[in-house]
Length: 458
Picture (tube, rainbow, N blue to C red):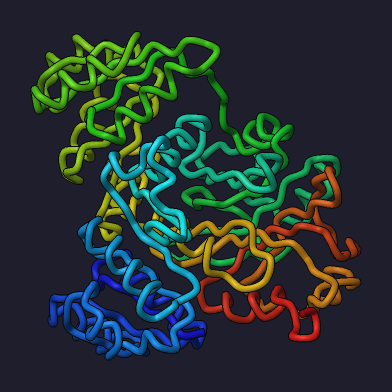
């Protein structure tokens, strides 16, 4: 597939890394020649320095025979015009644009993106994706990561293994025997900074961070088995009242069971806007690092605190201070993935990487076959891919034990009709089934080949 990626920043580079690694023909366009050079030096891609919205620049990038364009520059307007030029001049079939401004995303203006107006097939909003990820983290305070699959019936949860955990030093095979009715599968383990897909003989050790697929109804039991206590959130403090904080607070207000929410926002104008937009949320104007202000917000009695400003260091320090004041669960928004290894030593329970959430959202729309969802883990180290099995897929009609999966690949859950089951070696994958697969980054191309349809399907 020939793809043009406009914007060589963090998101554009990461998408290019994924697609070029899967042997797609990728060209990156950016007005910053240094960013283009970085991409061409480190990835198997072509690069064009120039403004992505200019027809002659897109022409040089190969737009006449491109199948998809992804507009992910830092300017909403450039992204929109790029998609319009791609459609009107070059007839590119698939157009994806990243848009940040809330005005462009308001539902009442959604008619703007019709093909006879502004022809954008998929609009990605980083702030909406981050807000959704933040709410996911809050929904599972005992885990450091969480994502839903199979229409919410299956969950991927990240669990930190601690001293005293009941399953420490127990082979995974034995866990399956001990808890035969538990619909849960350990699909990934991070140990000493390295992520791998475990084998049945492997054990979990204190300090490991493991990723577990579990049925929605078995989440409390799964967390209990792994030594985690579940608790309801009644009081939440948000540091940062921008678009992400506002979206999270609005959602918490809309919950049937009231969650007492307080926002601390340093910028007075943003704080006033948040106060006007929210009904039951208390907004405090001040510095989220101020111990007195945190005390006024009731941080010692809060069930969770989330630091979601646009500054990584502020978010990390706010979490550390909140933890020191007695808050049991803290979440930090971290743009720089190289800071992730500091989370555990600092006592930060979970973090959100906006780049990873945006990349996951874009990948969801460009995968082969009948892919329904893609979730990127860590710094693009692994992915969880949810896909429907078609009649022409190499998987159809085979038992899991007979499928030639790479070593770094594990099936997390299988959905047959309305039923979600834990996969066994004897489980037969049939046409129409939906499977969720954990795969290390290097194995994604081979997994896609197993999932995509053959040409005779059409």
